[in-house]
Length: 412
Image (cartoon, rainbow, N blue to C red; front, side, top):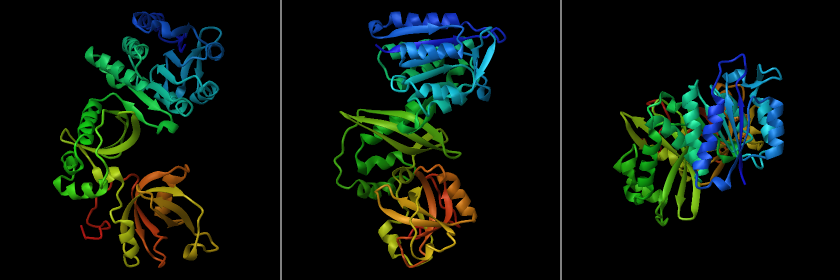
């Protein structure tokens, strides 16, 4: 039977919170649920960090709910043996959670400015809820009740988050956009705050998926001229109806643009994918070329382009240690990168060290992960599968040609 462990702390030297009422309200939510026999609640008030550690050992909870004060980088406020404030940093809390990650699936930090701790804890735990800003005691309590109403009813944590934020919105509580839902890196790390754009994006993508390829241009920024390219891109794929589209996370990548991570359900099949959206004058449209990661010039065309011709390439880039021909000099003056298209084609790219473009590219790739970027590449050696990277055009697949930018092979 999964357990919710509620740990509450309101130190004597801080503003008093009605944490007893929050614990009681969460228990009442379970009693109202038809699934009351399938969950248990354990609570520990006036909690010290040692109380938390022991409770994790005793109950092995599926959910930990922290109710209390937070101060962002200053930490979460537990109590010391005298009942006064004991600030706890995110790092040690994440290390503690690590030891229980087999059973612990969600951490709810119902405290002001707790997004800071959530960002660290999500490195260990699948789902974390935090607060981006200060939150009123009454709003925090109402959010918690609505969240557990949904969890105890059998929804997933993301849906429970949405319903809890909606509960604040329906009751005209101003803090509806303060909670943030975060997922761990192995679930494609995303952060999502409550916003009216989420249901609209889900409606657009539901309609997009359930429209034939030849007509999907109606949802894009490019318009009808994109139709032949979309038909060619999807080829002979069988069109499959989609049952549900759920936004998992949104990240702003420009003044008007967002990268959106979605889960798509079609029958028994589930897949996670990303889209780029543009919002302008309240209109939301899909940036399709950036979404599918098309090279602005196909690889086969690039291989036939004369040397030193600049080419714009949207790629998945990673650091590598492959060196060959002109780039394998003794001074090691180049860094090699693997450049992979959405379709899996690979080129070995190189960037000159001690140059501005090197600093920009390495600043993105230094974490060792694969990143979607837009590059300017040139064939400078005669070995066309080894391009020189001459510019970082965008740290994502969103890039719009200006007059001085590289052009497509057809001049557009």
